[in-house]
Length: 229
Image: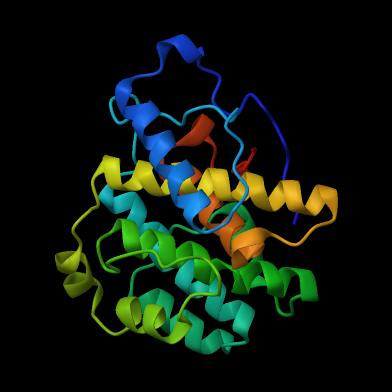
């Protein structure tokens, strides 16, 4: 997975940081230090709750259903079964690349890997929708069967009734923490070291990707999200 390194990830003058931004940065750094993860005090603050534009409930629900189908496709679920899911759940929000994956008769190893890793993105979106209570420490992949069950078992109507969006503050706390963990993963890879704290760099990357999309980072569409650190 390509992860770009860009010091201007949040291009805001340091003197304009709000109390909320600074406290969030310090809380994230404390979390990383507690788990033995390398911290970079020079990383900027992430966006604050006043400035952030979180995706709407509908956008999140549509994205969750699209991710469910794409991840299932990567796992090898039969196309005729996927078609039934798409019809039953009224799924029509695939990105251009997801449409390619969904329509493909066969997938390459790389395409299959892309698709199956979407379970981690789905985990984040379900958390933001209040379906999953917390995002667990990212030392292993998510519980796929529990995640699939949470979105697949209820009808779309019932699922939508269960939704209770997390607050921008909760979402930004996770974004800030994940952003700093992703920096540690990139730093370890560049220097040829193992990532400290036992975190799974692929899981962290996927979470960062989904959280950046969630918070409209640089207004990028799903297929074009950047995870600069």
